[in-house]
Image (cartoon, rainbow, N blue to C red; front, side, top):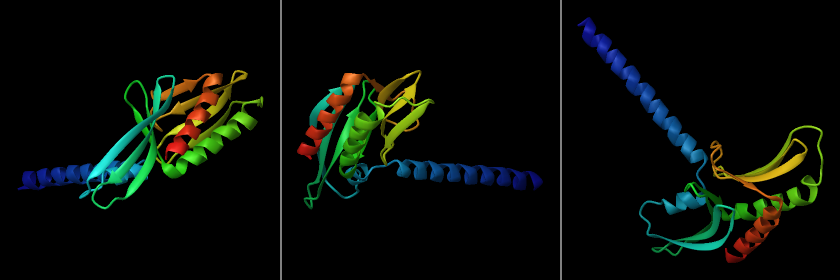
Length: 176
């Protein structure tokens, strides 16, 4: 009898811990989910996705994506980044202008400065995409990071790539 009770207690504690871990993983995934991704994954909807390539920075392809619910006609748009490893980041439509403004500020005010210490300037989207610059060893380095906690999702931009990126963002806003 004691063995049965002990076994049941161990099994129940394992299942409780596993369920809690699953709930936490789901909450973390929701934390980094964009509005466009939630719309695209809507149950009971027929979603059409149209991908329009607007440019690339090194190995990172940038596309505007139009998501349309074919049943009720609702449509939203987003910006999609895909690197050579197949990692993807999505920016909601309302974040594209904020990214463009942030990149212009970095270009006009940040990249010309020479801080005494290591310094970072970062734009972060609700989906976990990052774009920014950091000052280290006497030079600014600009980057795109497709996944918030993934150090293998960086695209480091050269100085000339920054201007190209700004043009791509303007082009993307025009296609939204």
